[in-house]
Length: 365
Image 1 (cartoon, rainbow, N blue to C red):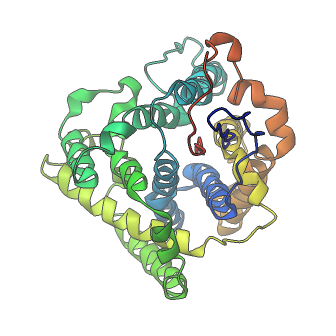
Image 2: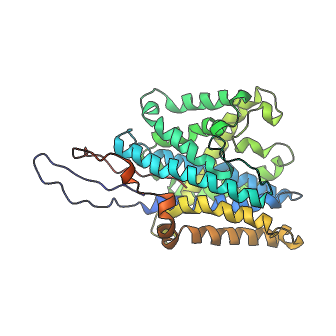
Image 3: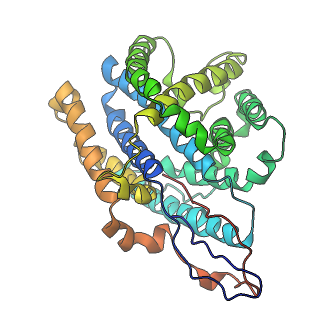
């Protein structure tokens, strides 16, 4: 949510607080991206034996998280490590991480039948890795804004990470480092860059590009590992020669950026029925995993028809409906204490009026 903007003029009574206006375009991006995240998770159990579903899955994974991360970086440009923004970082990322990492551990003890699975805050479980990554990226934002050529430098870091299997699973640092270039790219973007991808010529080209990308994904399914787009393993851990890690970092970055651009071009910029849901995508992201994990445990993927084209479409529709419901205002109001706790009681209150600053959007899926 956007923070409120308080304007303080010298020797003048502070102006009334006004909520910063949300941009419908970016709320639409976040909602459509979270739908793709849920659909991708719903399709995951349907990939075995289906080259078509695997191609769709690979296509979605090429750009849905990069799109989220680019937008997250764009809205992190104003992060300056001030006390208020550090507090927001703790309440908006650290606390939800602790809550949902613990909740997913206990839930998957039941669904995965692993009753002794330990609660480990150093080893993100399932989809909680993104909260850790966003926390680290935001903390390093002032650094990236001060170095020359930040995107090439971030790419170099990602390339080196693919050569370093010793990084291990602590805090899912492979993902943190390999997805870093998308966040840094978002930090470097300006409003005019988004206007460029929304031009009519780009919109007209977007669907044909997606069609070509789907055909390439279909061709690539039996020939390469889709795990390259997960960005969670080194080259050695994927059974590939070390030199292929840096090469695939550049290849996947290029492919992802092309599809992210096409996705951004197709997102409507006007107010739509789902625009209001863009403010609740963090809820949809953190909650839909329980339903996906539960669907496997409850045997929803058991019937043979679910693995047919009709079942694939049904899984996508159900996932869309469920994640849409989880982004609605009633769910946000009910669970705000867990996902966006206030926690003013835990922090010292400022003794002087805060400095004037632009609104800071805590963008996360």
